[in-house]
Image (cartoon, rainbow, N blue to C red):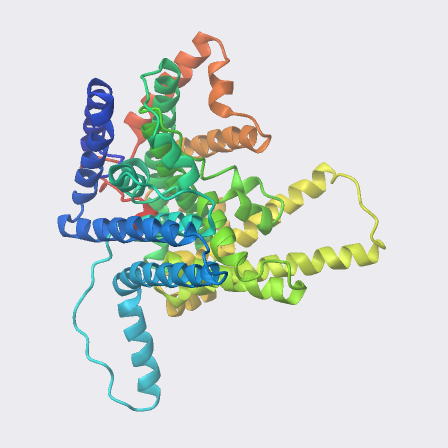
Length: 502
């Protein structure tokens, strides 16, 4: 069930209405049931994987807490209990990561092995079966493992109520594409009874409407041009590729940001606050800052559960950069079973290593003196340069593989057709002059809103502080634009959210 469908817009009010009508003790059971129903709309049999992940990590959390809290009778008991707890943690991690690896990386592994064997003229491993990737498995697996590690570290107590924990893993607004919630945030909210509040309703509905605007008006419209160019990179070369890649930067941002915004709004209707997964990333002045603002829940997960355990920045600069490269390589692999995704991750890691080296060089040249604030021109240059670096990396993300990426990169370098920016050729890529104008105005709206976020303002609260005439007009315009210019119906296929494939 997709957020940008009539089915979901009918499903959500029914869920919220019955949630508040039911007795407090039955509400979480109701949410758990509808969350499993929501997930089963893609492929019912894969709900067994979700349930298995839930059972393993729930039981693992109880066992970990048991061994962690065992009294030390003989002086050596604590060490033994820690060893048993570590074994339990490793077993649970292997079971869950094993399921993820099989469904997401098995075919990729077979393909790599066959490529290596073919170089030595050895018979390849026969495999003619497709393995369907379960929707959301990467997200709910990381969320469940984060809980397990938190229990092992003693950061939280193990959840005793299975219904509460199962809902934490499967809560439908953020189940299939995040944000990857921490147990401290979401589990605690599930323990509290929620009452209908006017403030939550008006904020939640505004977030849902804005998320639909991002997805249907901007992301899905930009996808038309991107798919046309990337689908025929032999015909569309040079500036066409550059323009399509810039549009893909906008598409993937609005697609994923739109999903996260609708998820936050949907949860808020039930009084549950999910984290904001994006914070104006394209205003970043460096790639390092970009990754603090993009997919914040995933970046935080890898920082806390991979980068820091590897040693973080506590073991010297060389080890720090090595740890960073490992994290970004793993992050790339998490996004997809392809060397192209790994290269995309490594490239973002290289950007940050280069930034660190540049900062060290600056300090050396200035003899360690702190410089003042950047002037407007320098801030603008750093923002545009960072956007260019990130956008170039997105080209590998969008490509179907390294071979295709090489072809597209070669096509991009043929810059003999820059006149297409002036002669109207871009309007022949599936987006006419009128719709291109609407898209550009919509993107401008996005960047105006994001600028307020970048300045640290609560945009929703800021919106509701305006007079009622402004608010009503803005909401009516949003509704009108989504209904009139959103991509849906017979002409366009309903676009699945990009991050569902991860």
